[in-house]
Image (cartoon, rainbow, N blue to C red; front, side, top):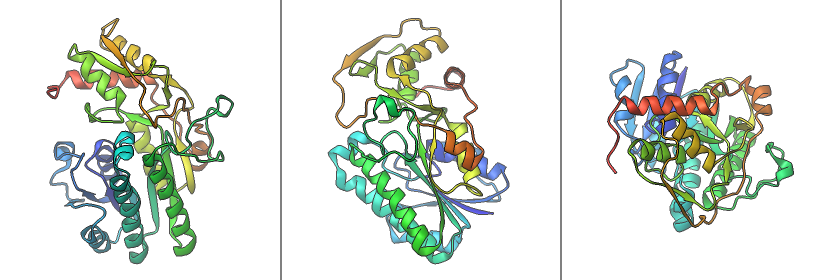
Length: 317
């Protein structure tokens, strides 16, 4: 079918673009390359069923591209994805994540798109979790503690209402912390990529706070699988996680083991504002709605990432 992917040149989006093409779909990508790269799409350049438009999702141009493509399904991944940037510039965060999402939704509704699948954030929309609530289920209240989490929650709610008022099918995939090849080693939300890059270069890793902050880490191929399944099934908010907590300290130890560095150099900085303390996401609804389960254990995913990075030049810095 005809699939349009916003943010299709980014870390997750480029993997999804490749997988959608491999599944036989006609794929059009919208990306402004603010974080995505041409290199991420190098392997599919010239593909007969692939098209790329370089534009910002907040602009009329993006709406025109979507209208011309008339996709049956939109996979909406383009976003401002930094918690700390959202705290420093909530207007920029809202412009991209709220107004940009509205621009895409409105264009999709006008051209008769059947379904929109939205990349939400399981790590931020719930806010601070009580230990007794872990792993978190979709029924729990949403209380974001950052503007990024708030904008993602707003995106979910706009999508829900568009579905009810405009008849568009929808799924909001609340992603855990995604990691894997192509993750930006300088990125705000990519502690696995940052640590792996620095350990392989023999550099010191920075841990914010005591290192016992936890996240639910899910490998990028598992996330891509969830998006592809959501094209034809699933409705509403669906967690995409493993149900397991992994601390920042555990991440560093796992990277060290995979890289054969028993005690990676590290230092502690103050904890960052707006960061939730503990997160894990129940995958039960994903199993029921998407017939999806995570396949890649954390240690296996880290080993794969280390092996991948060792086969290519590491970025400077």
